[in-house]
Image (cartoon, rainbow, N blue to C red; front, side):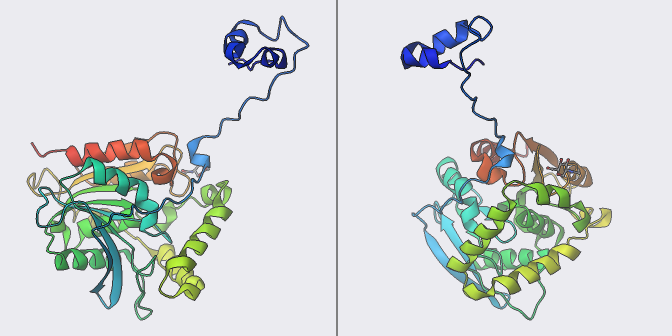
Length: 323
Ligand SMILES: *[C@@H]1O[C@H](CO)[C@@H](O)[C@H](O)[C@H]1NC(C)=O
């Protein structure tokens, strides 16, 4: 595309586009070129953290596994809902706020479904229990305990990053029957799949770290516990998950149990920088009958970078039937 020269700008905005398209710098060599707007792909950006929509049916905590687990509920009540709830699980050091673009969209597009977002143990507004180590199995057990308290027998689970690992743990574990379907974005099967170079060279990494800390200090039950919390997360992520074929084989496949086995879509950004790019495909290959969705132009932060594209895909995932 040609940038309009200053000469054309003097003639007024209305004809600039037209003139710019016809006259090239070759026949107007003296005209200085306006600097074209730089192309910044979505994966190089970290948009502001959205806020949760105001019209929650419930926001508060439930006592599960010796902690207070914070969650929020939108949409129809569990009693009147015609379809299973969607449960959203955020990533490491985030809170449910980071899923606000998805929550807003799903409230409107999935009016038959309750929408539930959980602040993971030790994250956001949920409390921690220093006596136990953090693990994805524990996070999964917390989510399962909450759903049992709410009387929910089946749900659709969206998990991002560590939240995705929690969904995988749920599907492998004792509460697997809760999982009607799973959308797992940016998960990993072992710590070796983390892309250290990708993280270190992400243009927004320092800002990201500062933002997580400021948000934690604003809402955590113990705002001063950031360093302890971070140490506990690093301890978990440096050892877990450790999933190999026998673990993935615990997930019922749609071939074995077409009526009940979870519909699983593994997903990642085409420009993923936190987890190695081949991981979503490898996860998909680990669970027969699961599917792979690669989102365009985004990285690990796709739910903020391009909510519109992700949200459309989430609607398609929720629309999938078992026929
Ligand atoms: C790690 O991230 C860098 C930077 O985003 C990227 O160029 C590279 O392909 C990634 N490596 C893998 C294995 O995904």
